[in-house]
Image (cartoon, rainbow, N blue to C red; front, top):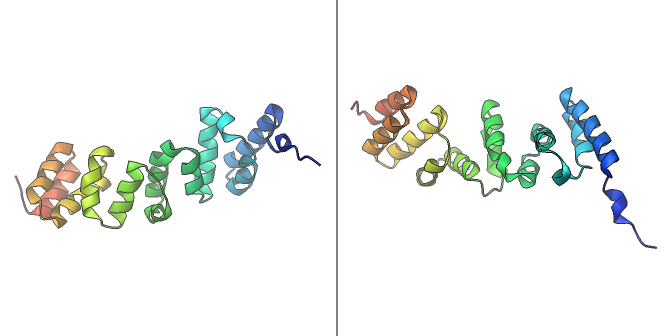
Length: 169
């Protein structure tokens, strides 16, 4: 007897009903229940907004790798979420070609040469700026640390560089 694999893929009507139920669960913070529904969906057929809900749900249920596998561009949101929750160490178990993920992994592991190679490709906030300053200082590149800090035009990073390098120029 032949198995019809088409039955395992929801049709448009089923997809819409599943999506609505999943969104309802996600909206009420029941991410585990939403995730069980969302994994039945054809992710690639979803709208951009619906994809964001699904990806956020996977992230909230600890399935960061799955979210990244579905949409590698979601890396920025994942890093932001984990940073806000003070859970950046969770990035260490992630496999990704994303520069921002690789930068954060290197920063967390204090692999400062890698940090210095990648920082030009990531958005610089105060936390990342401080990591970059520490990287320069650990490599003995004090003037470069100050030059980088000044280039950010962010007072907190500049003051941190002055503190760490002992240079007040």
